[in-house]
Image (cartoon, rainbow, N blue to C red):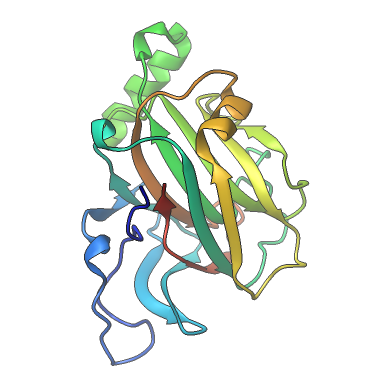
Length: 225
């Protein structure tokens, strides 16, 4: 079954006095701040005649997320799209000091945290103390990187429970809509080497805090099938 476009939005059209009402499917999406980080600004707008969620990052990093009910969501294909204004010089999702991305679509999965190594569980507990919630058992991100080849799988340098797949790279496709259709379960197996647990959340994120730069991206609907 194909879900309606799933999305989050603020009610104002960025840079314009006209208001744009978000679609019903926008319900349930909320901002998620990261400790010590300036907020990326997310707003509901249009881009080239298409409804879009605009992300404006200015040395900032935060997430726009929707929680899912695992029992009601199957893990099949996912469709998403993005439109990127420009790349961040020097950004690299595999470099701990420059780990920024102009575009990310993120999926969180549950699992048996007690089976994880002690060091990982301690990191989870620290994250819970800082944010008020336990991180997902596993997080899979689709990203646009400045240089890494498409298809590269990156293990997050801070936590191996976060892994990224590069689906766009370099400047060649900037300033146009990029459409992506992915097999979420197969990509999870590729990244983690195991079957995925229940899907618990999905999100988008544009960040430029590590590079102390700015970025502007528009996201189309995220659709689960």
